[in-house]
Length: 294
Image 1 (cartoon, one colour):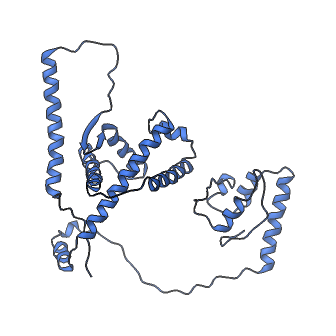
Image 2 (spheres, rainbow, N blue to C red; image 1 turned 135 degrees about the vertical axis):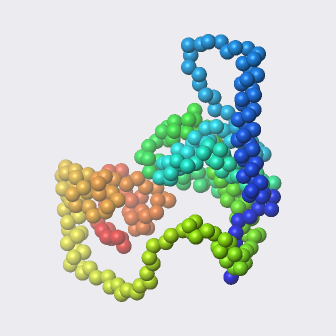
Image 3 (cartoon, rainbow, N blue to C red; image 1 turned 60 degrees about the horizontal axis):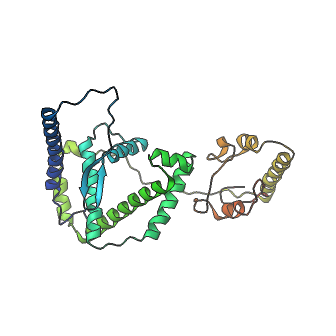
């Protein structure tokens, strides 16, 4: 069996890394020269106003740009997802962003097509997930991404998703063309120092016999009767929230009073979505059964 490894004919990894280091070094040197030259020509006037850092373009790859704020946003996203950013420098993050844009740029050069309709569908799904996870509003998203309007945010988000899709398509195209033999894998593995090899915990291979108990019709009826009793109590003025907190066995919604925010793409069983989307606002359904219970 042959294994596949990412490679790129038009990029040498070592040269690319050296290029990134050179970019960071040159940028710093040029900045120092510009500052020194400006000081010689004219002394900056004193002002009581605080200096404000202006977001600007720090790199370009074809039609793609990297803003200074893009680096900050990537650090924030990594931290928000629980990843450590302690040992990641801004230059390394810039290298990652440049690499992504390089793949996307090459995808355009190779005439890889990504349909706008596909990106729009992906964008709506991701926006829905973000709003559900944060329980926020579209205005909250617009403010978080520092945009002036929903339209500006959607345009920005569309371009980001399209670039990511092009990057993914280009990466897959490269991988499909590159092959490596088992002998090359063994040679590479033997070249790794012992202290650099990853450590794995114990692994077991087991066999088991599982028998799921059958719930009798009598037990099912007891559950239905209890749920109907809850429904009558709520109709008489009891709190749905309190009933859910006290009696629900669903770990995902119990603590929130049974509240769930769903749309037709939310991954829930068909029986649940069919009933949920058939109800009027404020209406309580009859007890119904799914594979997870009533």
